[in-house]
Amino acid sequence: MKEKVTALYRITLLAALSLTPGLSYAQTANEQNPNRLVVRLSHPSQPARVTLQMLAGSISVEGYTGNEVIVEGAGERIAEGDVPAEARGMRRLSHPGDVSVDEDNNVVRIHPGFKPTNIDVRVPANSMLSLKTLTGSIKVQRVLGDLDVESTNGGVTLDQVGGSIVAHALNGGITANVVRPSADKPFSFSTLNGRIEVTLPASMRANLNMRSDHGDIYLDEGFDYKPLASSGGSSKSGSNGMLRLKMDNTIHAAINGGGVEISIRSFNGSILVHKGK
Image 1 (cartoon, rainbow, N blue to C red):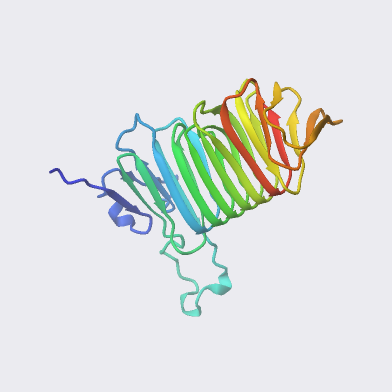
Image 2: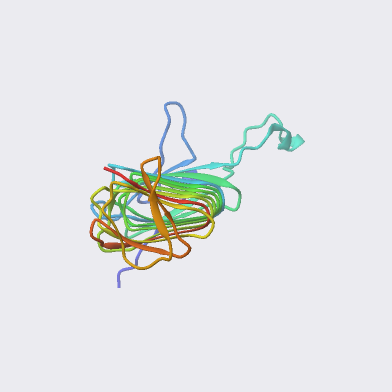
């Protein structure tokens, strides 16, 4: 049986980078950049699946037209006063973030160190993402694969995204601009404390299940809106051109004739559904 080889890359082990298959590191005009890892996929023509879980720090992911996954970790800054007296005036060689990455058959796992680290990632636009952070925000731009994102203490921003989306923020708001949604996979947006603002394509066919225990629910007038079940409430047009839906229970409704299931749930915060292009 042919042995499966998994490439392992560490930012801190710069001397081994040139010997590790599938890995290159970027150079600036003047010096090597030890914070940057470029991971070549086993199957560049196929979508990548990128996973990242961290305790403290923010995550930013951007889709691009290339076929490599590029990871940059920015560790916490150390103030001059925190440098030990015996090390004053010396150059620090170790990397504060200690981020590592492994790739196996297009599955890219990013492993942050124990110190707070903000991580920026560039991925092929059709990648699938699984991102979680305990303390920090999550931002995803121009990624069209399936998304599963969660922040316990921080907001979630999704801009020009597609696929199927599961987004949760316990203490923070969610903003999502969906441009190329999946037609057969459900969506879910939820938060305990925060506002949820979702923009859907004007022609998207969906069944909406929306609830806010301590907030109002708004829907742009331009959608073909039809209630699906008795929700024990009423609706009226607002002065801002949006339909105000004030209900005591979950709202079940169809837009544009119904289709993919979309669940939107906020305990403390309003819900706004906008009509995109």
